[in-house]
Image 1 (cartoon, rainbow, N blue to C red):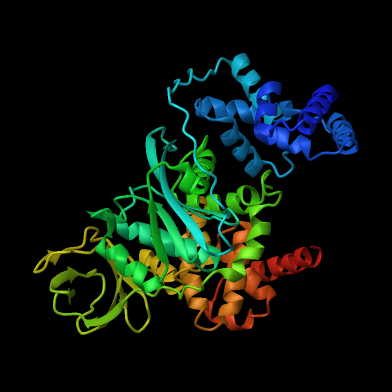
Image 2 (image 1 turned 180 degrees about the horizontal axis):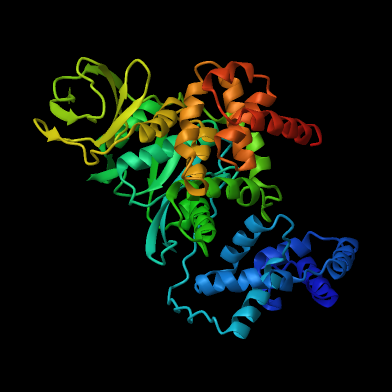
Length: 499
């Protein structure tokens, strides 16, 4: 908080016609800070000073957590530490300057000092101001990369895809542990369209080799796969120079924001990382008010969402084939081996093209059998890499494919693998079994309840179904734990009624 003398000096200079940038330079504050105080009346300033005195934050409460983060991640930035504390403590409050000063103080006291930043000698480059496009007209796309330590201390590169709506600044991020190719970039686009609930009329890119394959007299040549995707979805494509803030500075800020999320974070799997990123975007990055626009991205997107164009849900190509002798399937002039743990000769098999891989399922029941890397050549024989495929693994994969795109199912599988790997396969088997006799709506409600409770067991799943009144239908499972289901169902009823 600045002093009253500085506040009055700001307004005196502003009344004389001095620009906000020059005021900031003369007083030694940032442009955003000066702009914020110039909008305040004197009464509002006095009130803010009083509130600041009464609401002084004691960061020493979080000191053990901060020291632990700095010990594991010495290169962590204050914004990265702040993101971790926001996710860890629901009541965490901060002011940026005070928090940054406290982090600097902790570093000095603990001896965890950052190396001096390299000084970059760049000539001042001035860009003309770009007008904000109308709602739903434009989105911007860019990529980034960030080094993250995994749980074994090994450094891994995390590749980040970002799409942001230029009007509302609503941000979407998607991480990959492999460099983005044209196919994976297209998949990231589909996820972004699903996140926004539609697409903009145009999308702005730089000349990234993922999308372009050279130029023809100055005009970018789109890669064939990306060009087919653009024709399928129907949006306009525009390109600009690399690292040009005057053209696509919005998404470059978005990339820096997503990298700050990855600061001071331990890599424990790409699925959990993407899930945590979506939660963080919803609760913090997209919910923070912009100092320039005075509204959060969520609030601005309410004005923009109706202007977006709906994108039909993508359905991968599916084809049916019969199994030949020795459990093999002939697909597009190649031969693929199927698991040998069950006789499949003459059985109808469904093949799903997932881009770089092929998924093989039983056509009648959608039971997952195996997955192969897709072979681009012809006349090849592709054998199973893992010949010890089991029914348990097939149940888990079958559930993911049967409920393809269902966020609740994906969350259950990804978190269950981490928190309860011993029982996640049996839980997937029980969900598939229950789906044959219980309405899908009740199954999905039970899955959401399991995710909310973070108890990935058959007992929690079946207890919720018992609470919903489907206990009589589940007698055929002959569970010995049925008494526990009834007892837990009574507890669930009490918990939900007291909410």
